[in-house]
Image (cartoon, rainbow, N blue to C red; front, side, top):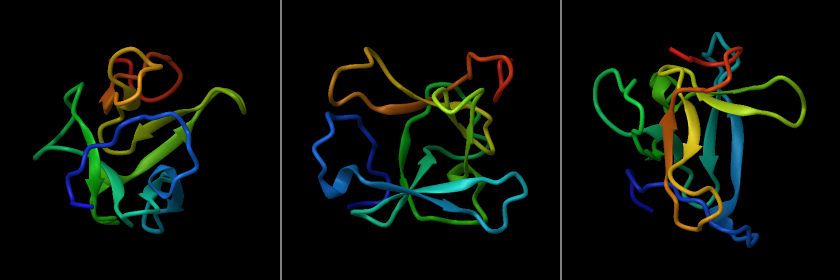
Length: 121
């Protein structure tokens, strides 16, 4: 698997490329995690250079790097069933681009639409 590979949703089939681990970032002050793809050993990160706070940026596989906050993710929500995954640096939520139930839809970042978490600015 190459660094920069885009992340897409597919029907669960219990295959290695569909297994992810949430690994605490030890240097994080906000209880962030790396989300590591088990098949590649790479982590989810926001594609791009610079600030990367733009909505719609693609989520890709990147080296797990404690010094790169665009690979740090927060899990937040109101209760045990409603959770949002938010990038620690950009304060944008992880989302599926396009109709939610279709296979092959890419993961992107976007403003969180719930006022009590992330960023609704």
